[in-house]
Length: 529
Image (cartoon, rainbow, N blue to C red; front, side):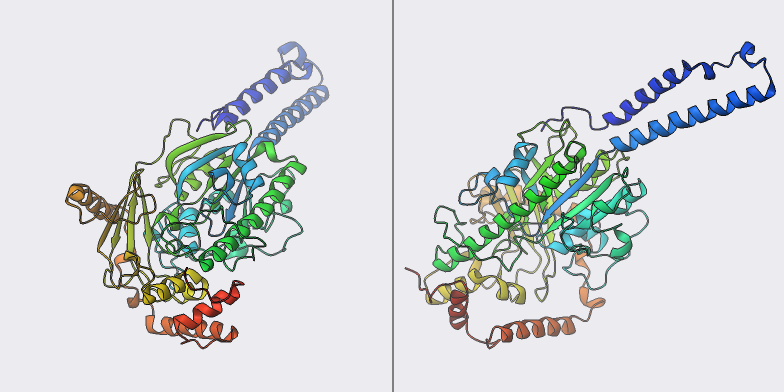
């Protein structure tokens, strides 16, 4: 990725502009205060001095106003649960012209990943610039939310202190007048954390840092009007009508997302803000499917990332370096001309930077599925540590059972003897290792392969060091601070109420549940062909 101009060029430009004003002011006769001109009446001297001061003040105010005008706006467009299934990422079967336009006009990052495969933990990390495991926001919807220390400011707070208007909304003035989703695992008051729901609420000359939250493609999906047989599905799913129908709905939801992104980009054009606005588009984590959301495979962590800043980012560029959503804070602060902070991320627009050597991610309790998993990803390998190998991959998760039809399909097909996968095993290996060059879908675990023993040991040691260096709080037993049995009962109650609203017995069999899911997807009960 190349930047056409230095990221901090405005600072030098403003200094030069001030000097030009100073020289221009020195040419004004009233400002030439030599002894001859001062040898006049006290009244005239007073008048000249007053005019001189007024002109100086006017020059200074003009320079400051122009400098403020030149401070760029920063806009985060955040999609909920989005993988790289977009036209600009080469995915067929989906129409995303507006997001593709953003890629053409800016930079596309091919290897961008979240630090967690679930929204609240991932959003906590991107706001603080630190791993969610460092600040204590690692469990999804953390029950005992930490109070951030003074040395852990959020990007929102830092931008506010720099004079930016900070908003969190839906991107159009006609949308809801309420604040949009934030979902952080730390203590905050949304009404003071943000200055408003839309950048139109700011003072006319005030720069803004806006987050636009778009719900899609979070479940529940919109219904697809047509099938998309040309759209490839990951090979770790059975190629079955239920899988296809659910995937079609996911892609249709992405197209709704694209329409909403287009409205935001059009608004920037209409308001004359495009040239002076850094736009960063990304998903808060990967796709909402089995082996995606709530898992540390690429399906749960890989997200599109696009940046556009006319005159600063060369259009149509691509970066193949490893990037993380932790890079959002350094990039935003640098664009605003703020000093860098000691955080794991890096300024994406630094022209001399080629990406991270490796990325870390973590998954902890999600709803009623307690767990602790950590991973390391390099360009060519993925290492996963399962701290609870006694639990199955498909341990009970009320959210996933209610939301992921393919999970029930896989269980039914496995019970029938019609589908098999290591993912269906009743226990997990303690460690997993995947060669992403030959096995991009992470289906063949090499952890027990003697040829990879040294590499496995290196990853093991690197993860242990990362846990120490970052102060990973995931090792602390959550039951010491949270009534976990009560939490599990709460989640069970939510599951039962949802099933009853569907007219279903909460304890119905997987076979009967699959029949209902098939009908809900617009299909008859489907057996594999």
